[in-house]
Image 1: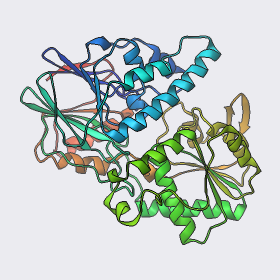
Image 2 (image 1 turned 45 degrees about the horizontal axis):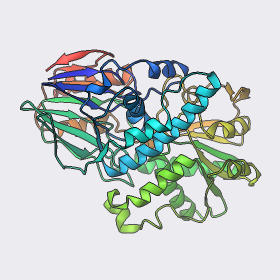
Image 3 (image 1 turned 90 degrees about the vertical axis):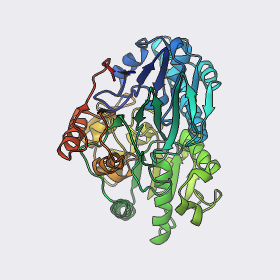
Length: 448
């Protein structure tokens, strides 16, 4: 068996790992790089392997950095099967269609061929196969199943029984326990593990602490009659925010503050959460129904551009949740131009920000930024709540890993910047749970 690493190596986007056994080739994720112009160049590069030779792709979850290049894979010749859970398939279609539209607009502007089109999205979606958790599928003599990763709705880790050995791909492990999702499942044994390390050297605040911080920020904006602007990933982060904001507004008698969800993609994703109610946590199912989950009186969905522009006419204080989560596109940018120069306002970062993105630069303290061709002075306060991350932190990763019971032969750390991956590698060795830990570079292939 060979493992090839072709994305999210010593970085956090572009997840793409190749498993070869016998004559069979299986991909674990086929993600897009997300970090500005440099990543656009990387995304246009040919695949290192022949897409037509790939028998199957397992998609751990439908974030663009894990599924975003599937239409390009199809465009370049892939005609195998794409396995994921049913909610992940529905969300992936939303993500890929949105990406195709954005890519098309940018390509027309730059007069270049788009990475892929809606036609390629439609093509690859015909190859998706829904796979329930714990249901086994055989590919080329290997047997594969999905377990609940607890990261976002329908997210999965992949367990492969290949040539008498067990390979586990963690996908992105969840920040469990999460209010909306079932907890991350554990794996009984593994000979080899490909494991994410996004927060491999960090710890999150507790859920209680995050609610306290969110309340504190909301009260600050109310007192200053300002705007709370939250760039949010359409899937999971937005839905958790809506859940928490609903609770905070009701518990603190803040019925007059309006909340705008200004993201067509997030609105579609929220509807899919409601449709996939049976996948949510037992706690949610005990206290909510699909009809009440994201339905509170202060919340307004703004799908059209006209509705988005009308938010400016609404009196303060108000909360605006808009995409994209790293501020590298979407409606968040037009809001940021208006919100950032005012010291009464708050920009609240609630998710991971890749190097080079506007969100990362603002989080690191840049006081002048260029947005949509305009020089913007940053006078608003920029705050962050780490526990809204859908990723496990170091302690959670270690708990998941140690639950396997016996030491795997080798662990490959991916999907983490080098300081995070190295911190996790050092901890795994220091705790005596794995002696052979590798942080692969792009293009490295290992025979195991």
